[in-house]
Length: 349
Image (cartoon, rainbow, N blue to C red):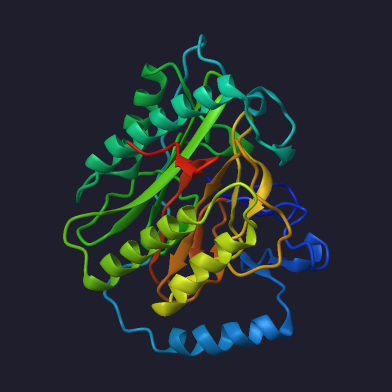
């Protein structure tokens, strides 16, 4: 689950910290938020903005016509209960809004085993959720199934109650970039849907997501999903102790550029472990971050690509984020552990 900023500077989820760009102005100067239009935008250098316009803006004007309907909010079911014996993350009981924990998530052997266990469960839940994707199923039904499987395994669904999020999983359909709230909308033939699962097991979070096909998806959607997965796989392949974090963003954007896809910049990966969101910030675009990967460190990589505009617009629920032009968006995510030999994917079945 990723993070950005609310208008109140309170942290949401695909995660942005106060060290977003070490070589740029403070975070509040990087972002513009228009409460009226619900636009979330980031201030970029003139050089970078010019390159972005050259690569993408012309393409946005050339988007083909589509018969696909724009997403609309459905009805929400009541919050699902969690048995009292299941351990809750601290933010569930606290009235304080969750934030970003300072410092990386670096683990000893016991912590690594706990991370493997939470990552394994998250992967199994996501795999099961993907089998439910078919025309006619409501995203709320997917939430119900995910919620039940998580609590049946003695874990807590991390999104539930995080900053007021009302459900146990994020379901982001078609033009939804991230943080879609499960509701009464039924999936339709040709949809794509990202399901974002995070579990809290024995005091550790495991975080993962994937984009699934619903019925007969057209070539445009299939290629976007395939390239987004390739971006994640390529980014993971370059990870190892001492590697600069900025290489992740370059690897992702280099591959996305080959297909002229947009890379969403306002939502990012993050450290994860004993807390849901921690250092470091993992940018999915080219950047000047000065950080390096550490042995036994855990964090997420979760690129979000778009066919058209990569500008995000937030709905009035303060969670659901969609593309400005209604074009398709896809995302994949893994929690990884930095090892002596490279990186171990903790959320892989």
